[in-house]
Image (cartoon, rainbow, N blue to C red; front, side, top):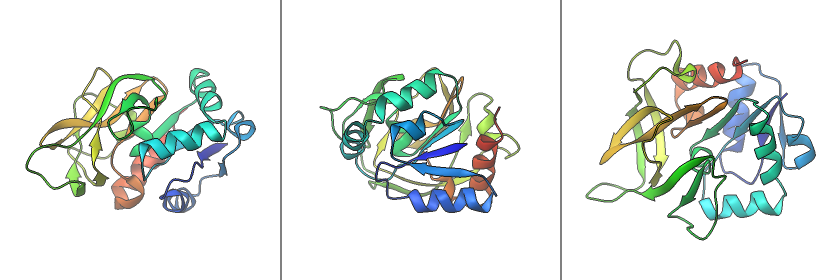
Length: 198
């Protein structure tokens, strides 16, 4: 059973629609006892890092999510759902993320429009199952004011001021900074690739 974690993310319906279009069986859950039975986890995300982590803790979901991740089930974080996998974010530095990866999620700086919004490419830096059968430098839709650092588990980067992590693969943990649910056929393929993971 694929579980979409519901902590009040603004794009929940879009993610549901994508899974439905792919014919996937899923449930939406905001209770730890349901998350505890997940065979795959999907962390959607549009909004504020602080509000997200506060909601996760108020719902008692943090440990349930970490337990499933440590049990080895495939987990995908989308946009803010990728950012929450890190230790902290400048958006709410007083609150801890899941801490699965080292580093701080930072706000874009420099002479650029913030948020980074629109179509941009995914530039693979190493093979990742998330981008299988998609081709080189696929264009996908972004809407983010904050970005994750490039680090050892970065599978693809995107250029906006500097290169930032746009795809993560670390064993069973995956993240994608763009919104596959808004990225047309390429986005559908990315989600399908995740759903087909063992």
